[in-house]
Length: 100
Image (cartoon, rainbow, N blue to C red):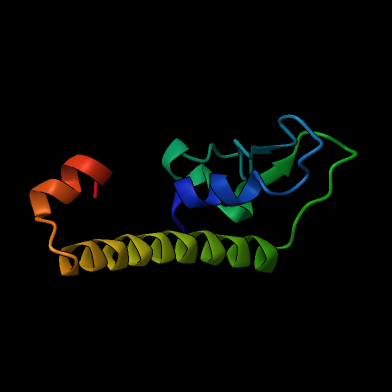
C-alpha cells in the first residue's frame, strides 16, 4: 500500500478530530516494527477514543477514489490540450498560457 495515498485517504475520516490516528511501534510480541513497515492499515491505531476506526475496505475504497481522481484530472488535461491544438495553438503557446 502506498503510504502517501494511505495518509491522504485517512484524512477523509474523522474530519472533526485532530491527529486521530497513529502507527503501532511494537508488535504483539514486543518487537519493534521498523519505521518503513509501520505505515500500513494493520499498524493503524486510534489516538482519540472518540474517533471511529475506518474499515480496511473503506480506506482502500478511498485510496482507489483518490487514484482515479488523479487519472481523471490528467485525462481532462490531455483532452484540453488536444482541443487547443485543434484550434491551432502550438505546444509552446499552450504550455505558456495554460501550463499544460
